[in-house]
Image (cartoon, rainbow, N blue to C red):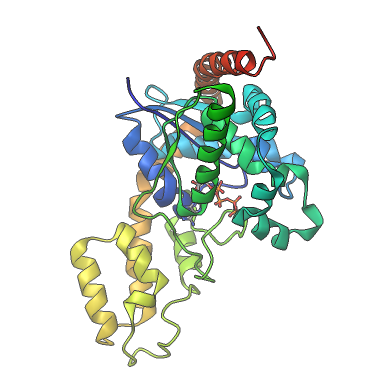
Amino acid sequence: MKPRVFSGIRPSGRLHIGNYFGAIKSWLKLQDEADCIFAVVDYHGLTTPFDPKEMFKEKYEVILDYLAVGVDPKKSALVIQSDLPEHTELGWILGTITPVSILERVPTFKEKVAQHPEYVNLGLLSYPVLMAADILIYKSNIVPVGEDQLPHIELAREIAKRFNRIFGKTFPLPKAVLSSGARVMSLYDPSKKMSKTGGEGILLSDSPEEIWKKLQPAVTDPARKRISDSGNPDVCNIYSLHKLVSSADEIKEINGNCRGAKFGCLDCKKILAKNLGMEFEDFRRKRKVFESNPEKVKEILKNGAEKARELAQKTLREVRKKTGLDI
Ligand code: AQP
């Protein structure tokens, strides 16, 4: 049997290169070797401030991004989390075996509390439990994610172990899979990861002009003040981005030019802008095709939900029996 894969992204904006290099690149590889379900996790999108008028549109934007980037509905099921209430039912059951003290220690919970002290809600605290349910409802073995999600996957494993111990073996223990760009950093504050909500991410759908505009003020080696100073690529976020899209020869040359003070940071950024623009040229073209075909997208989501529902309901029947909710 093929391994089962689940991964999801919140509908908090169009996808950026962190989402792509951190998670989606692995999805594209895995869809040829595994049974994959990829979701827009809209219930999770309700846990931080959001605009209800934009929510529906945002979900659709992420689905268009998935399709244009190469998620193939013939190979993988594409779903919207809230089309499958089985996720929340399992989330409730798993919540009853998850100690609150563990959830309060989750790093992303603490980060979000600091970011939005006025928006500390129960959904935010139980976010990792619903995420565990998203994964376990399909008995997933593999979860391709960026590095920031590792604590959540660890918790999903703990919850699965706990359920298996109390109610009998039910769930496989899911494993995280990281890709080469497991942590793409913010352009303007490279101590933080690039994110959708910051609004500073390079989007897959950005035009070459937009990419260039965003890259110009991006932080480089802070110690390099002028072109004649030798730079240190090892501490430069722009150099890290080059490693994701530039050729080995270009990277070698950039390294030499930077250390040897042979060109400035803007020259280095120009090459990056060109390469990023080219990397997503095909994406931008395909996105327009899907954008002009909403009926097709609707059908893809309907088919995805049908496939996922069958799997989810099977797991839920087993869980309801094991917990004594059903006989
Ligand atoms: N910068 C990143 N580098 C590598 N991987 C990343 N991921 C996100 N950012 C990076 C991975 O992308 C998947 C979706 O995560 P998300 O929905 O939390 O995306 P986001 O861009 O982080 O969105 P938000 O709404 O702005 O979230 P916060 O506020 O939490 O940053 C995951 O697999 C993630 O690891």
